[in-house]
Length: 334
Ligand code: UT7
Image (cartoon, rainbow, N blue to C red; front, side, top):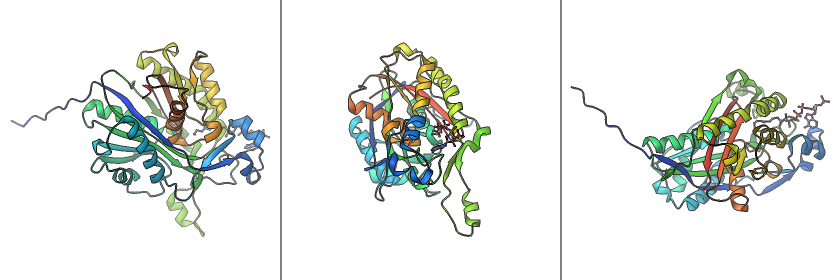
């Protein structure tokens, strides 16, 4: 008779044990970008809500920003790096096809031989990472998981492209996920619509770049308006579903942390969801721009550090972007 494979039990409940973030030092106001795109500070503020953003300096690499934010998250969680079983990094701006930057980050943190891999789900990447991490802890394949969202989009954004130059920015955020006595992470509601693949993407494939006479960085390009309409309309539904699946309503919610893409999308979602006045809404996009996978953890961490949100608050995360892909979940803030 064939041997039977043992089933491993994981934790019954999971939660975010600690969070941390890293904002690059260079503050870039709209005025610095407008000439190259024939725009104005007023247009950018009105259409996107962005006042300024952060761009990284040379030493502020994807690895460096990830390690800095992770050290803060680990200290907040009171977890030693050696206790991590897995490091998941959500990013689209680590400019090495392979190996995963997660392996370098894990090693620098002192977490080797934890499993380490990158995921590519663009702006929804961090929420994918939290969902995966929670499921790993629940299934018994890991006890403590570090989920990072990190981007250095300034390197892959064309400063002369009117559709993206004023939007994208840099930064990192991290969360340690582990077992809990009570439920702290609701079911993830996620999905993708590849029929909208072209809406936000790298302009040329790497093989097309090699065919160019003079190789140029294949920058990001975006059809902003269709993405804007899709996000404003569809993402409130996904957020609502995440509330339903967690068994709560907007009346139980303390904090709303949507992807920081555009203040008008944030406002539209808050209106559609009928969020009560007292719910704190993350509006980090004004000073941080759109940092893709880093935007949700950067915004959540900022609210925790400023005291606008507190440990134990119930928060709704929802993120969306290239793919088009999306993910949302309800969490208890650490
Ligand atoms: O993070 C991943 C997900 N991404 C998003 O969620 C981004 C979603 N999209 C957006 O945030 C918005 O679409 C933008 C902020 C990118 C653009 O705002 P919009 O209201 O959708 O503007 P639009 O593209 O419809 O353009 C409106 C007008 C056009 O002029 P006309 O045709 O009305 O005369 C554009 O040519 O604004 C013009 N325009 C600009 N003007 C000054 C477009 N870009 C610029 C610019 N500066 N940078």
